[in-house]
Length: 198
Image (cartoon, rainbow, N blue to C red; front, side, top):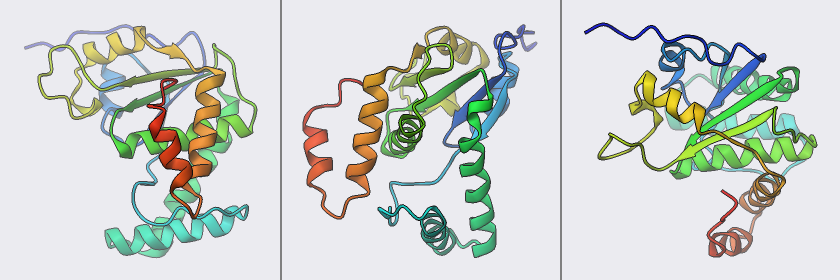
């Protein structure tokens, strides 16, 4: 069966697609979404999430955990994190950023961090920041993640993307602060609200 020849969808602006994994990288290209891709995959649902203003210390603690948990060399874990965080830090050089996430804790905590960083940088423009976030896809009975999507399904999601709002940025910031707090009570309080902004 021939693969449809999809035309480009994101060539109108210099675009960065951010995802907490590489599972849709090739499918985005097949769908005609040819912007640059950032895999931002620090698994915040595991290991320590230190509340420190010392970014070097934060990266080191995360790298040590990831190296031990996944059997990686520390220098390799550190290098990967440094690259991903650096690319996120310079994402302001793009005219448009698309955030691709789903409903599970791994994705949601990555989304929270990204929104927190954009909140800190005072980044809010409906043209610049957009969000694709879902817990179901038409045609997929048991939806697990965006990696299951066909090129056509990713095109449909792209057409349904929504501008990131000030409320979403603020919620991301608040949730990150609660997640990195020594006490779980702030996170518990946020969870009780059902987080309607996201």
